[in-house]
Amino acid sequence: MPRAPSGIAGLRQARAAIAVLLADRRGAAVGLAALCCALAGIVAVELGGEAGGSTPPPLAAAPLRPLPPLPAAFDLPPLASYAEVAERPLFSPARRKPPEAAGQDLLGKSSSFVLVGIVISGSGRVALVQHGQPAEMARLGEGQAVEGWTLQSILPDRVVLQHGASEVELKLKDLPAAPGAAHPQKPRG
Image (cartoon, rainbow, N blue to C red):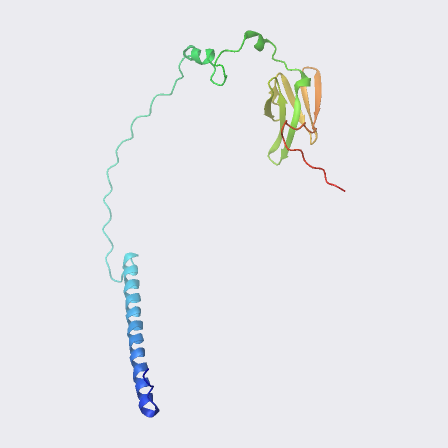
């Protein structure tokens, strides 16, 4: 291991080494400053801030072509052309027309309705009513109808349905849990 010089000679050697290091750092700092100035100049030219530069020539406007004529109004085909859709309903699992007897009794029994939920918000009131066999869910607002019954009013805990002179009030109640569903635990205490 070399021994460090002692005395004045050692100080001079250390001073010379430090001067070389500082000279390298000054050179690097000056180089970085020059690079920053060059990049700033390029950005200024790109943004159009070049002093004394001329403005680019205006682009020549392309001649406007006339728009194609609008198509004639769309007319639906006659209803008879949709006979296949009526005979084989898309959303029926069997893709068969329902029996005629099913359409004769459009008025549902009021006992077949179950009030599942009520949503009251700033934008309106909505009732969720389960009806029919098999049970279907309907999302109804006031004035809308389901199975011949019209929803007259939605209150926080009940709704009123009307058909002619008959009125039925459905109250919001807990539904039985579905088979296999987890039962909520009651708190112990």
